[in-house]
Image (cartoon, rainbow, N blue to C red; front, side, top):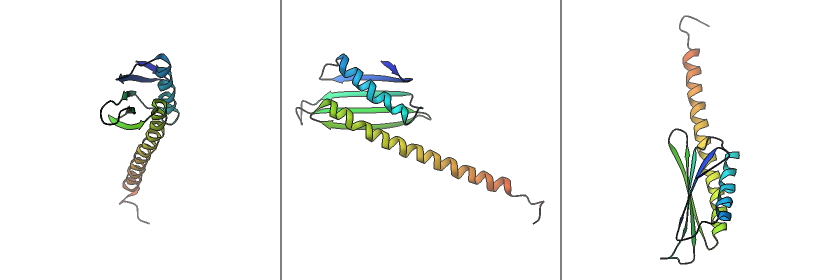
Length: 126
């Protein structure tokens, strides 16, 4: 476990050895996600080398904990482990942008509602 840019990053390896270079690569890539959204609380990264159905493939799964107990998740499979890590980052970024847009729209609707409620004044006639 390490904190990169204020984000707690937990890395788990299954059927492969987590080297120092691999750890630093993952921390660098996942740490850059804070440029898009600084409210990421924790990132759980699971790296796995498949040995059953697709032997020789690597899988990278990332779960991001964000405020209000929401979870953003993405995974990628590739014959190259570093490419699998690289492919998961744009997927996470796209989901974060979608989530932020939904929150922004909800806030906009709420503010519009408040504006109509407080603009109504029955004692004032036009």
